[in-house]
Length: 256
Image 1 (cartoon, helix red, strand yellow):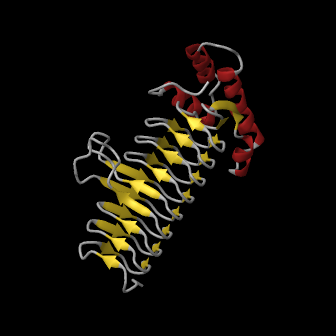
Image 2 (cartoon, helix red, strand yellow):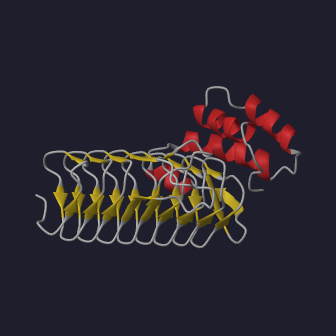
């Protein structure tokens, strides 16, 4: 299952059933789980741990050194879960010592062509990043978020669960869960109703989220007063509780 032209370091750990295509390079400190396929001309550098049944397409660069001037060759890590798809020319960098030592990616994500994930990013599961989207260092992407083509995310930003970032959005502030944002810089444009419906949210849940959005964005309240009202309305709604918790725990400004 390993092409004779592939260069696989003896210190790499390759499970049974892994496919490695022609001229791919697998470095020392790389672990690849069962059922994963690596296409031609891909490069994977360690320390990197890749789970089961991932698909890595041709010319991807996985686990390369961080693009950070402070990086001095420390053995930082990249961890990837299961069933992710990394399309052509995707680049994923390892972490830095200053940023927690690790870049981490969950499971069941789709990274389309020319995606860049910088050092120390933390990406959940069921995330989709469309062609050309890029993350600066230390970005957090929560579960089920969607980034349209050529979305750019500034370092240290966080994008909440089920948020949708429109094509070409420039994200310079945190995006709370369930929002739909777009523009340069990105501004809120309501909640991601269509995406929520596709994810199984019923009309009652969507309406509760919509009310929380209106309180935060349409009533022209100060942020702390809006947050107080949202928390009061979060009874019996885990979605609104998550929305409020995100805003309350913010470490930087949110899009408004």
